[in-house]
Amino acid sequence: MILFVCLFLALYSAGSSLSCRWMDHKFRQYSENSLDLLDTMVNNSTNSTEDAEVEDTVAFPNDLYSQASKASAEDKLGFTVQVLEEMAVLFEEDHSAASWEESTVKDFVNIVTQQADGLHSCVSVRNKKLHMYFKKACSILCIF
Image (cartoon, rainbow, N blue to C red; front, side, top):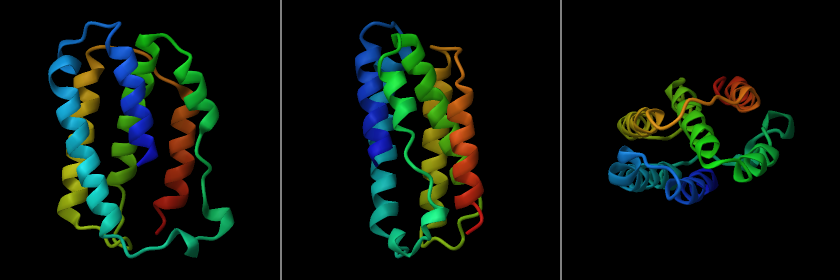
């Protein structure tokens, strides 16, 4: 959830300085929908993060978000597009051990993918460190 709040704030501040038609017309609607679906998944989850082993966790990449917050508007959008794409890949993995409704996860992935696709027309930047973070997260989360 914190991830989406960070993304929304980064995009809100970046959006005013870039002219991106899709962002002006669709981003808020898609963000609200994805946050609602994520909230549904959290509320319907019976898994507990307290059960996870310490070595099975991935720390939030504060340094990457800090760098992104200081970047240009276009770089912030590029960072956001990449986070959305990486999240879609992460949620497309097998999460049968989770108590999430499959249709909710599919809807969430669809909306996140649409957000990334829509914003993709505004940017062309990719962050290798961010990709490695999500790759590590998937190596831990996708085994469950």
